Amino acid sequence: MTPNPSSPPYPALTIARWFVAWAEAQQADLSNLKLQKLLYYAQGYWLAKTGGPLFNGPIQAWTHGPVVPEVYHHFKAFGSSDLALGDDPFDWPEVADAPTQLLIEIWEKLGSLAAWRLRDMTHDEPPWQEHFVPDVKDLEIPHDALKRHFGALLSVG
Image (cartoon, rainbow, N blue to C red; front, side, top):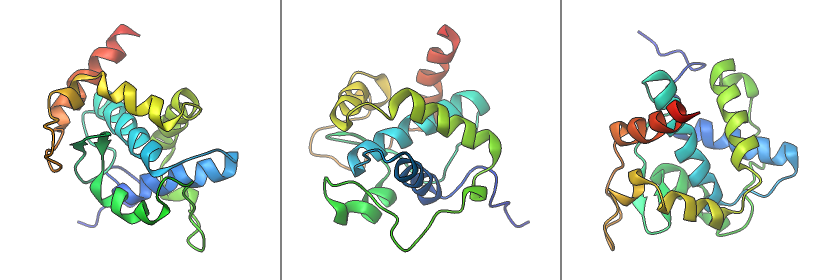
């Protein structure tokens, strides 16, 4: 069976490129650090709402918070500068309506926050705290830890 490219789980880079395209359309700042945190929140809330992942690939607990390694490495040449798609435009129909709605909600809630504020927020949350070990960069934050944390947030309101 061929997977439907317009339904989850997506390649992590598809969701990352959605955020970069959205930031470009909004003329908003989006560094790799900030993108990593938005991906973490999007995956966490999607897991809590649906039970399944929004995108493929691990989220790991790194020194500066949760990171999707594939996406980090894809955009690392930008350093701390704003990300851009350049000659690789994003095609909005690549992401279905329900995930798009969640991504818009994540952006509206968190997109105006500074990257370092988002980093600090993730450091105060159990998924990162429970899986971070100093000087170890490849420890995965499992889906069940994200479901538990974000599910509790959803149940509170």
